[in-house]
Structure formats: structure tokens, C-alpha cells
Length: 247
Image (cartoon, rainbow, N blue to C red):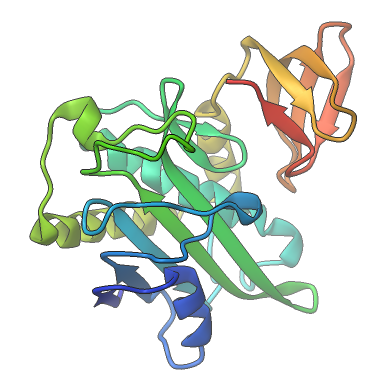
């Protein structure tokens, strides 16, 4: 992977999109600081300068997971791979992380990483994908607007300087590359195994009706739809932003 570092960007994801035609497949745009970082659902991604990993990966060649080209209907495989890459990366620090559907990364009940994916389709197949990732490494103080953040530094006592961030990004890229030869079935199985709260009764909120209910997370469908079983035994299916985890 080609890694291009910047001192400061408004957004690594936006920068990757603007430069996509000039960049090679699997190029990474990374920055020490994002001034307008974006999270899921239009939320802001806030980070202290040169304390965390802030980067976006551009994918243009979709000969992945035994599928060539990657059909548009299989695009959630990229979300699974991105989430798994971070979980495997964090294992290098001795941390056991889980995937809060669809692709936030948690250690316990605290968020350590956010992932935002933007896909461009070409007919019925993938045209381009940009995976934006923010991993909290060295930051110890967070905005009170963030409900439950944590970082590698808070959990392990590790310290990170600029050179460490650059080497850590290389290590993450290796974790991601190791997932690409996997089959669709193997990748999906690994993702399902690591889902946050899977098989455990927990509170949820239906974003459409406002109803709060207790449910058991069963897993996901191939398109990424979340499957929950409520206290009455009925299966509920939710797409992104249709259900909230009450943490």
C-alpha cells in the first residue's frame, strides 16, 4: 500500500475522494490532524493532533474475497473487512475488541475506533470505495460531547509519538491485507463471531418509532441488515440508522 502523510487535512476521506483518479489502488491518505473529520450519520470526528491514527484507504480494484469484480450487492463485505482489520490490529496491544454493528469498534462498552465507508457503484458492481478510519491511540482527554470514548493509551499505558503513528499505520495495513484472500464465507463468519452483544439480552431503541425494547442480537444478513429477536420472540430486521444500541 502507498501511504501519503499530511500534517493537516480537513478530512482524509474527502482528500482521498478528490485525488482518487490520480491515486493507485489501495493508497492510504493519512493526516496528523483533521479539522473537519466526519463520522457516521454526519457526526463530527474529533481528535487531538498527532495522537491518533486518522486515515482513509482507497480501493479501486475489486478482485477481493474470491469475487471479481465485487458485485454491488456484496459491498458490506468491505465493511466487515475494515472492522475485522481494526480488531486484529488491536490484538497486537493485547486488547480484546468487538464490532458494534455496523462497524464501530468497542473495547468493553467503550468506543475506540470509528469507521466511515463511502462507496461509488458502477452499475451492478463496485466502482470505488473509500474507507475512513479513526483509531484512538494516544489521546487521553476527550470532548464531553463523546459519550463513551477510550484509547489504547488509556487501556494499556502505551505512549505514541509521530514515528510510532507511522509504523502503527503500516501494521494496520498488514492486518487489512491479510483479510483480502479470505473467502466471503470465512470473512462473514469471523465478523459474526466478534459482534458486540451477540447472543446477550440488551436494550435497544427503534429509531423510527422511538420504542425501547430488550432484544438479543442474532447476527446480520448478507447485505448487512441487523437481526434482533425481541422479548416476544419476534425477529426484527434493521438497516443502518434504524436502531440504536442503548449503552
